[in-house]
Length: 248
Image 1 (cartoon, helix red, strand yellow):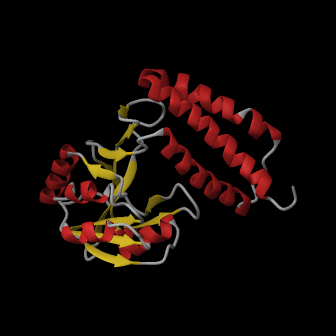
Image 2: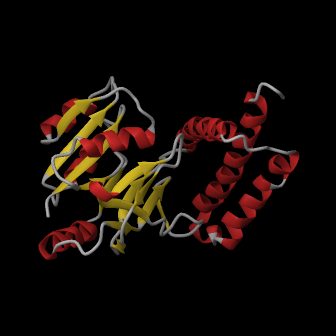
Image 3: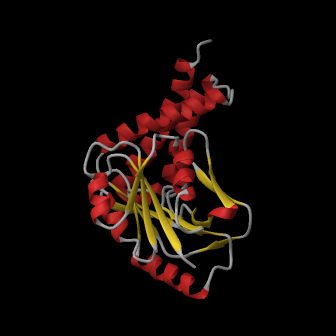
């Protein structure tokens, strides 16, 4: 069982070394870059990655492009701001030794937010399919929140994939602005209606669910920030749909 790691990048010089250095269990590391203007490609190449460039194809499209150009059929796809924990790396080494019993594997993703590991707030375990046989799997999702669809059996890995998210509220707001625009574009393309209840009720319910039902209060001040940001995300997404639709 040989594995190719695939990472898509754009101006990730802050993160790329950590991601690549965690991938010792992989037989190839492929970085697909979409026009970085910083040192992302230079750093990746120095660390032994094969770097190729591609115009931006969307999140799912870019990740499918990377999987198609990997040398091996088994692909481990991670984002530049992610890294394998030592326990997950050991688990993958063991999987390579024993051979795969499934066509894809989910793994829990543990996020660091504002310097704190988040164990509640609906953020954990946040299982994702990231290791898969590309002959039986593909990335789907037209605009945002892409995911792997496996046409076969899916197993579980138990150790954490580490996700290094926002280090400041300003960074979170910038990211949110980009993602809410993509989410709004997707809703418009799908013809989904946005009534006043979406603007008034959904954000408040999102805060209640995140902070209370998903135990966000156990994540301290960071959990409170997550709940507020989740509510704001929903409001901005729906508001952008209303303002972007020509018939409004």
